[in-house]
Image (cartoon, rainbow, N blue to C red; front, side, top):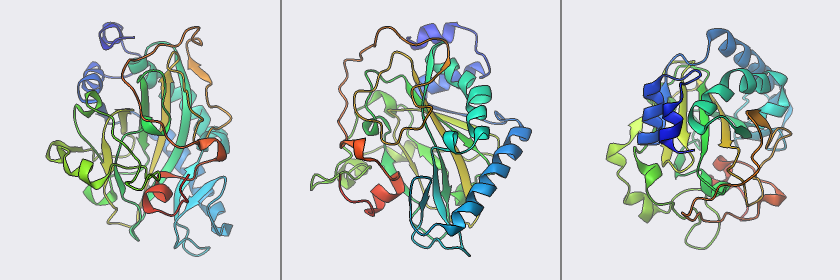
Length: 296
């Protein structure tokens, strides 16, 4: 659906200005979008997951862990596929986030993936400039990610920064000069970005950020030891169909969360770079950008 058709329909939950911001800038920030009771439920489950990580020695099917992780100092960088790790995360998708996605994608929405990212003061948690869709190309660009902040996030907590209007610009190559997957823009491309126009999305817990799959974004390193848990869930319009293997599918990938399945795929004429073959698996953007992950 076009932005004009979507904006003409009354929203389920989002303020109309947030919808206008999303289509104009490529992202929106909505304070107090998640009820406090939900934040408490999610934090309780997340705390138990982090406790369970203490016995892990290396990244695996559930956790991506930092090099300094240990039983006395759990440093989880990512909980992978939280939607299948605990029913609370999936219920949150169905009861809270799906309506937000439908306000921007139209009535027919499918779930794509989820992850829960942390940032720790020790370093290695910067996420360099990138766009999302190069990781998982689709037939069109009605694909977005909703980030639910589970704690207050100020300038020192490694908040996300986004460049307004960048979703209307080019898609960049996320391979390094030697041809290996890097998961971020090359230095020469990043140097040409209008980073002075970037908006840093600081917020209180319970806020959500929503960004389009083409939007250029980055998050600076954390300067505190608070962890900054950010629960990310991605959705697509039902007629946006993937044409490369999913990097890290869960049991809910492709599930219709609002409306009905699409009978016809809709094709955007703008091309998209192709990522490596993810059918063998994928660790995390932290591992890829830091060079920990072997080239694929």
